[in-house]
Image (cartoon, rainbow, N blue to C red):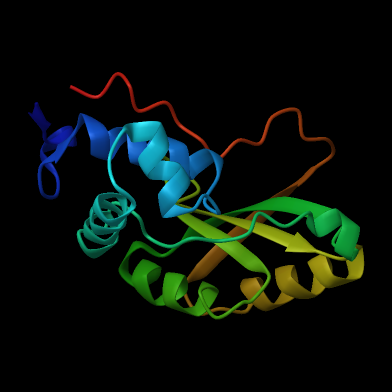
Length: 161
C-alpha cells in the first residue's frame, strides 16, 4: 500500500516507513541486516535507502554525540525578539554561530528561538553579547537547561496514514 505522509514528497510504502523506523534506531545497520529484517534482498534495501535519501526523507546520517563528555556542559534556549522586517537577516546571522545548533521560527513573541550548546557560562555570555549586537534583534532572554529528562530523536511512524 502506498502512502503519502502529510501530502509532502513522493509516495512511500509501508516497507519504506519501516526502513525509516529501523534507521532512526540504528543508522549503522548493514543492508544485509536490513534486508533480513524486511525480508528483502540487500540490493533492494540499498535501492530503497538510496531513494529515501534522494527524495529527502533521509536528510543525513549522523553520530549522536554525548557533548557533555567533550566538556560542553551548558545547553540553553535563547529567545530572540526581532524586527519583523529583519527577521530573515537575523536568522542568516544566527546560522553563522557554530554553537547554535538549532534555530526555530515560533508563534507569538519572541519570534525566534535558538538552541545552543557551549562549554561554560563565559562562552554563553559571549554568544548572548554577539546575538544582541545583530541588526534587527530587539531583545533576548535565555533559559539554561538544568537537567534533561528525555531527549529522543526517534518518532514512531506506524500511525502515518
